[in-house]
Length: 200
Image (cartoon, rainbow, N blue to C red; front, top):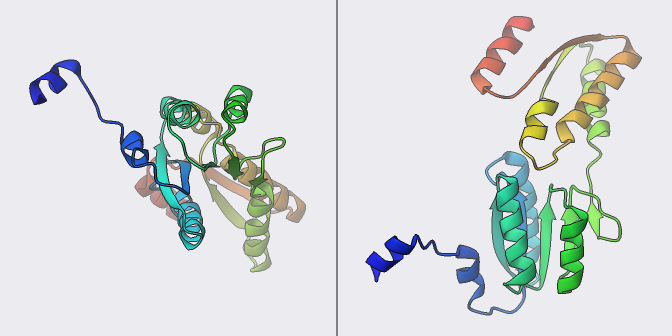
């Protein structure tokens, strides 16, 4: 049996295994970059509420557009859950139509879609408030550390949060006539810390 599996290149579907038991009251959470702090916090909040309400959960991690499409296709066509929570992912009209055709309830977190229940973060306001706080403490040379638009676009997942925070940061500095010190992509945390230290 193991020889045949190896010859066929078979890989088990963990999503199928999780759902094959037919457990009632199951919700799938599709979340990008599961190990990032922001993803962990959003996931922890959702899991706490779902557990309190007696729901089982299936967590689908997404690092690439291919993984996103794989999980969404499985959830809308092959495996049955009671609902799906999509976190920080932009979905095409085609995927939204797939959810409607499947009659599958969908909720979005940190992404806005017409006629879909959602909650979003005002990232521009967040960047502005953080900068205004530092300005209120008397700081005038304030750096910004975040993803570049090129890196965000390169992921293929449509992230815009860092760009919006940068916009809020620039707005606050412009109003205060403070110095826009630097913008650093978070490619390498050690390099980032060295650059910030030398600049300040």
